[in-house]
Image (cartoon, rainbow, N blue to C red; front, side, top):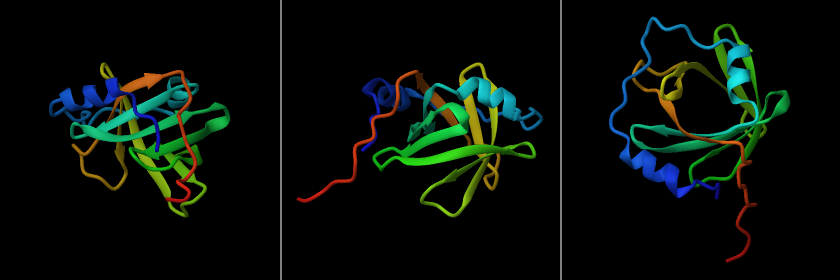
Length: 137
């Protein structure tokens, strides 16, 4: 189970409905995204509840976990004006638009409607805590 600091969970619980990124706002470039995320572990929320945690390593490598699930290794790469992610155990590519706001990073999955953004609720320079799968009873 990934480590989600209690402060982040408390912050998520306190977050009210947030406004989506303006439709006319230009998504971050790959260079801007890389400069913002590399060396950080970001916790994301969706609609006031925990969503997931991602550690951004050098060389565009990532470690991702939905809250309460196992960690997954992957990479990110630019595609047109999108930031896409590919994970070792998933044949799909996951592409997003990212914006930097006064409140931190916001992202919308390419297939989602405006208003369905995830948002940064916490960041840390510390690596993620990723225990192995549960063994036995």
